[in-house]
Amino acid sequence: MSLSIAVCVKPVPDSDHYDKITIDPKTKRVNRDGIPTIINTMDKNAIEAALKLKEEHGGKVTVFTMAPDSAVENLRRVLAMGVDEAFLCSDRALGGADTWATSYTLYKAIAKAGAYDIVILGNETEDGGTAQVPSQLGEWMAIPHMTNVLSMAYDGEHKMTISRKTDEGSIKYRVALPAVFSVVRETNEPRIPNVMGILKAKSKPLTIFRAEDLDVNPEFIGLKGSPTQPGDIFSPDMSRKSEVISGEPEEIAVKIIAEIKKTGYVIG
Amino acid sequence: MDISAYKGIHVFCEISKGNIIENSLELLGEATVLKSKIAHTPEVTAVVIGYALDQYTDLLAEHGADRIVLIDDKKYQDYRPDFYAEALAQTAKKYLPEILLVGATLKGEEIGPTTAMMLHTGMAAHCVELNIREDGQFVQVVPAFGGKVLGDILCPNFRPQMASMKAGLSSKVTFKGKEAVVESFSPDVKGFGDKIEIVEVIEETKEKITLGGAELVITGGFGIGTQEGWYKLEQLATKLGGVTGCTRPALDEGWTEHDETMIGTSGVAIKPKVYLGFGISGAAHHTCGIKTAGTIISVNKDPNAPIFDVSDYKVVGDWEKIVEALIQVL
Image (cartoon, rainbow over all chains, first blue to last red; front, side, top):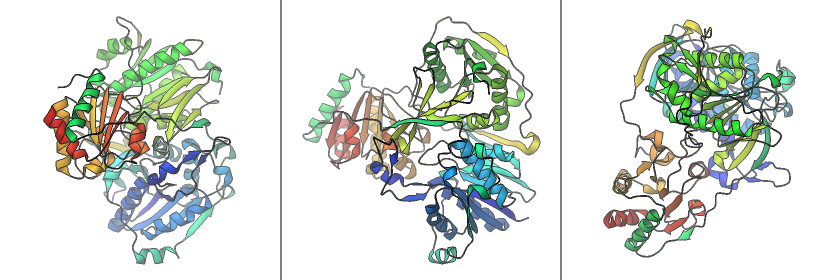
């Protein structure tokens, strides 16, 4: 049996540019001007995992995201990796969603687009880093879900054998499909799109869903549908005195040791 | 939802290799602090899910639990996320807590949001601080963009208000000789039934390093450059009697296998007396893990490295020479 695989991705600000992030003191909004948007790192592992399953068993890989219209560019890049089709949920009404409302919207988009055997996500995003959407999507879809997945193999009998990381080591499960899995950095090494892929991506189907295209309860989407509500935001001041220690390496070493002792720490 | 019906603070207490984890004891401590700030001084309940749980009750009581709910059954011996989340959700449905705290462990990060869905409530992940505002609102402070931004999260209309927190961010409190009401609860948990089967549970034999209680932590960034360089840091750590923590580059380059020692937003938060950083640039996702360190000393050849801004003492120079000199002088 070939596999129909959905992958959820998120365009995020490139973490190499986080130092440019500021907060507007008046509007209390995060200003991310001039920071490039990239596909979240672990989401590339999710795409890679899906493409590998497709290569082995045949099928189709479809990507979903909830983001502004500008994410079309990020999705073209994802299509260039070998993904077959992309859906973008973009609407002002979807903005400000927490993980509960985000996973609801993704669930509705996936339901609208088709039937899938496997849904794969990155375990967490770099910007928010909550790691909550995979489990919550699984609950919305009412199908088994597992996070921190290290490896997955399809047995051809509508079951996946997966190995997942735990705090003590790992656990191997056999999970009946359809199911939701979220993968981590160790899962694989994501491929980089080649020229052929980039050319092909231009003609691959990419659909934009507006809120009205999805069969959503308006009370469940965006900021309004989010059980958690944002309050004040601030940039923590972590600056310290930054006193210079200088001299020859030995002198510096002696001074460092003196500072260590001042803290009350007992060496050895 | 009648939110006034919800009273009490629940802490999901996790067991790992036969022990209640430190993170859970810290959260019980955090719960006792919250309790003292809430007008109706809600009861603190430790919820434990697992098998053969009687042995843990004294420890939980002495760390602040007023009530202990034991969900004790062989079906929880090995970890099934669906079973654990459903058991926790059913406990919340029975006791109606206003707040439910979960450790931001690999399991907690899975059980927590699943439970939140089952209860139709909100959850704030990886909180760095929890507070009660003057108007009584529970404020959950979460990091974004690797800790560069902190934001308050509120859950005004749904209960319980759920939050997860990593180890090392709150403190344990001990109440010698304190007793707690112990109850057992046997929720009817079905999960996904036979759609999930456990094939094998593999316990890692590799010894884990705990940075939690370490008084001196040494770490290195991309600037370390080689495996040999990393060994030098470990050698210095041994000489100083400290522990080596790691960074994303050190893990990615394979200089260390101890991913449990990664410091920062996607790793652990530490509060040693001394932090020594070598060849660390100082990205926000690393530095937000050392916020509460006593004295921060860093060495980097780049005079503009952001790590210097958050350091008490800075050395502009070749880290290797400094480490060698330290090893020699000691």
